[in-house]
Length: 157
Image 1: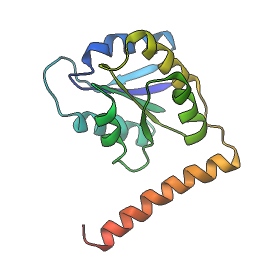
Image 2: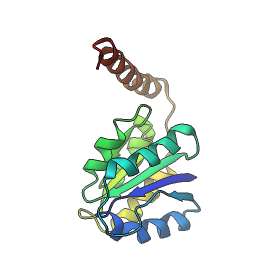
Image 3: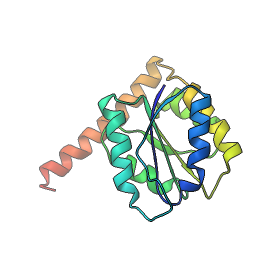
Image 4: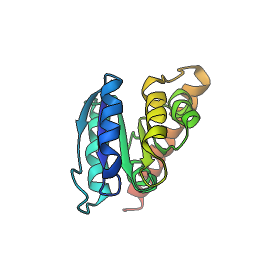
C-alpha cells in the first residue's frame, strides 16, 4: 500500500515509530514532513498529504500531530478526503470498512507507539466493504460536500 505521511512538530516524536511500522507492513511511504521539532503549520502538511491521496499518488494518508484533531479538521476541508482522528483499533478498521476513510489522524501526545502500531496495522489492512448500503452512505457524504460547495459558490463566498 502507498501511504502519504505527514506530521507537525508535535507529532515528530512518533514519526520514527510510524515509519518503522509502515516499513514492517511493506508500505511504500512518501514523507511530507516535518522533519524536526521546529514549529510548522499543520494545514500546510495536510494539504500535501491529502493532495497526494486525491491524485491517486497514494492509496491512503496518515497524519500525526499532538492530538490528531487539527490534522483531521484540516484534512476534512479538502474535497474527497474522509479523515478521522483514531485512537483505538476498532475505529481504525471500521472507518475504512464502513466509511471508506482515506486519511487516518493520530495524536502523539494521546497515544504511544505500541497502540499506534495496532491502529496503523488495522487501518492499512482494512478494506472498504463495498456493500450497497455502505456505498450509498459514502456517496451521501460526497453529495454533502458538493452541495455545501455549491451553496458557498452561489453565495459568492
